[in-house]
Length: 201
Image 1 (cartoon, rainbow, N blue to C red):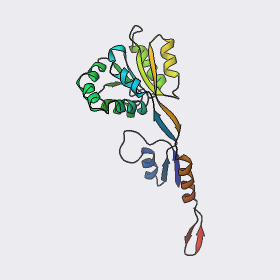
Image 2: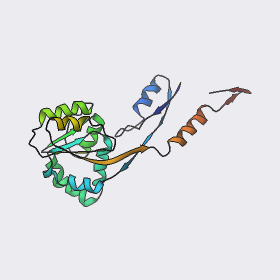
Image 3: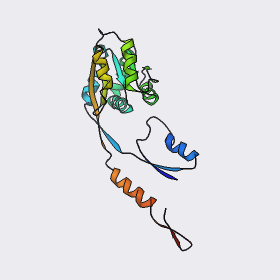
């Protein structure tokens, strides 16, 4: 059976997508077509905030894209040197919260020590934060996407935990989605001929 996967490739993993690998192990062929694209925004503001850890009580990452935005802020050599020499150590004296193992791995690559990788959802992470954090801390800094769910900000606000959000990427339809779908269906349903007989896929 040929299966079409409309999803994003997994970040931070080498080799084939785990869904494709699992389907192949059961004799199925799978094609992955990404449906979303991401545009990074507000990177100058993000960079300013990253290099002023004293103004925040910690960091929150709920998606690999937010971590990717941070990486983009560290591309300049002088910024990277400053990050590695002092800034990341200042952040590591605070709590660095994450959702999911993939995001946690990317955060570790920045030299930060993540908490909450096993929470799995923003709802569960918000409960962990509320249990751990004092209401009198400086605001936790939450770089996020334009279509983030409001579960975590609402839960923290209702429990008095200060939070500052910044939209660092916008989500849109992948520019090649229509073309990729047309190509897939053209190839998948193109008639094949075997010994003079037409066979439809």
